Image (cartoon, rainbow, N blue to C red; front, side, top):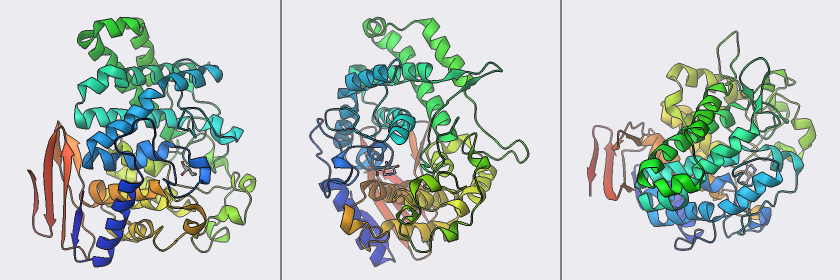
Length: 430
Ligand code: IFM
């Protein structure tokens, strides 16, 4: 689990603290609980679980302690009945994972806008399930609930999109990770993550047909239903600016009121302490990484040029009012080799809780998503680890002061060691 950094003792120590917190805030061998947004350190958000676990923390466990990752994913499978009940309650089909979930799998969010419209959480859970199954090849998990969760979430999406009379489908009444965009339509992050969810569900259904025909039948799968998913996948709209061709956040972000973000915020404390939440919804500012976050999770869907344009469009507008934001920017910048920005954002993320950067650690506890995303910045960003055709590959971009970065990780039942210096990159089973 150790990550060794030569050349920057301070970063080394902070990263160890970060890893320590990720370890002690997880009940590694218990699948009846997940990890709260503040871990075990505070009752903020009533200790509930968010997409923070699936998208931001889970990869740490997946690569360092796959049994712990399995339990986190098993929690999502165990609470599939509640996700189905939640979908039914929201007049949908299949399974819709709640936005803010308690240990019993039920929705605890009390605000109608965020709880109802941040539907992306369902696709985020599917993303994590797919990542877990891909990186472990855990066939038992796939057959005992993993595939079913992908299939039931796909069914939810079929019921959640509205057919557009002039073509395609719209995701109406949604909110992406950027919680300041008002209630909008066709959030790009959500729509692309849903496409990924549908791809995985189609793949899972096809695999079940041969691996476990009885389950295929029990789940009521048919070729027609798979065709519906394929149709939905290609009918989902992906918003782009018609003049520049740049990716848009959603259908309405460009209509918001322009404002200089510096008038809303000087230091790193969240601007919603001074400007009310309602007012912020109408400004053209970003609360936390949204399009940029998507580009870290589905990097192969975007060209370098598209990533560069998105950074120029959205980074200057971001207020980083969520503790999830600095680390995602660091991750994006490290993954794309924008090293000055990567180092600047990484240092905010790495010391976020240790130095109380946003002034809310003492009041609210540790920010587990930031801890997880910071770890991902090192492993997937600076080391550039990715998995291609069933094998790990590295594309490192080391921060200026780092002479050497080394760590171990698990992939498909094997342990690997990575050693990166300025002159040499090695990866070997060990
Ligand atoms: O899940 C996050 C959300 O994205 C921003 N507000 C806080 C939540 C819990 O960390």
